[in-house]
Image (cartoon, rainbow, N blue to C red):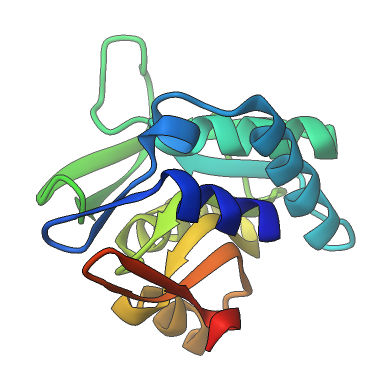
Length: 192
């Protein structure tokens, strides 16, 4: 998605440790035109897959998943990173490692929100090691749901998570694919 690549080049910042900061347009301050375009593109990519629900993890994936859910006219569910008092009853639960925060957390979803009748599209802002999407896939599996695939805003291909998911047979669609980040240079896979 050319618009996403342009925003990354214009406003993205490479931080130490291989972190790409995109807070000015994607996951802290959100550009509404970009968000709308992302939702529409995800809806187009997965239009014929029988998706019944979108699943993401709090918090940066929520806006993207909500935009795609609106474009697809489907419900969206998000996994909480900690069980809270407003998540009662039976839950689906899995441990997920956060690359950005360097810690593990227990992602939970009420069993009422994902069922074996669902065909789930996973959505997230970043795909690096693939841990978040792997965790979301485990939650869908616990529910007995079928996976339609995964849609991500930005994939850092050089970290291998997307390739591992694809090797497992999961369809992964990334709106921008970064081949490498060197110093201040960002190179997209289409630029090679």
